[in-house]
Amino acid sequence: MPAYKLVYFNSRGLGEVARLLFAVSGTEYEDKRVTKEEWIEQKKETPFGQLPMLWVGDDIIFQSNAIYRYLARVFDLYGSSNMQAARIDSICECWRDVLQAVLNIIHEEDEERKGMLQKLAVTKIIPGFLALLQARLAKNNDGQWILLSRDKISLADIVSYHMLSSVVGRFPGVIDNFPTLQAYVDRIGEIPNIKAWVESRPETEF
Ligand SMILES: N[C@@H](CCC(=O)N[C@@H](CS)C(=O)NCC(=O)O)C(=O)O
Image (cartoon, helix red, strand yellow):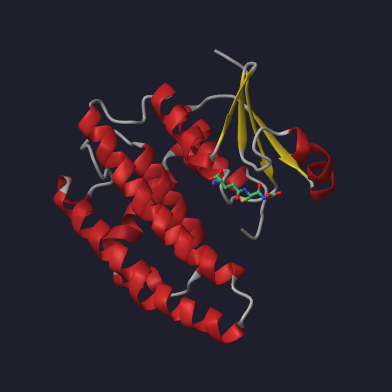
């Protein structure tokens, strides 16, 4: 097995899905968290000047989605056909849209516009996708915990778990109308390797 080293900041952010993939697969890696001061020095030496970055032996992968997909393939969490992989990608891309809507709120400096973006996210964008996701989940195995396959967790489940617990969870009450999704998050959180990681990971705001 190659030596894995994930380089990111001390936050969940765009690094946490990779950490969850390492956790669920029971794979050892170095979870390198650079400080702001270290980053000022290191930024110019990284291939695209941003994090996360994954070392696999002497190779480097950058861009969070590329890292997630690589790890999901290696850990057999990416379905068992091209169509399943495409379905997994579709769910992940929906979550990227939700993430973008949340980032737009965070980055907006004008308070009035920030409020409008927040209202749009909380009343339309997030519940709209949660309704679709819940309906899809309910179709599979009576809402039991796999989105795409009845018996095997995938990258789509890990991304959904992260987004529901760490990102949607920032908006109080938004998940309350989606009990099937809440139960799904709780079930994934009970997987022993995930539970152990979540209980032991550094506490960070984002
Ligand atoms: N599209 C990139 C975005 C990466 C990104 O925005 N990284 C931020 C942290 S979340 C970063 O490196 N910020 C520090 C900088 O740009 O100097 C990805 O998904 O990996």
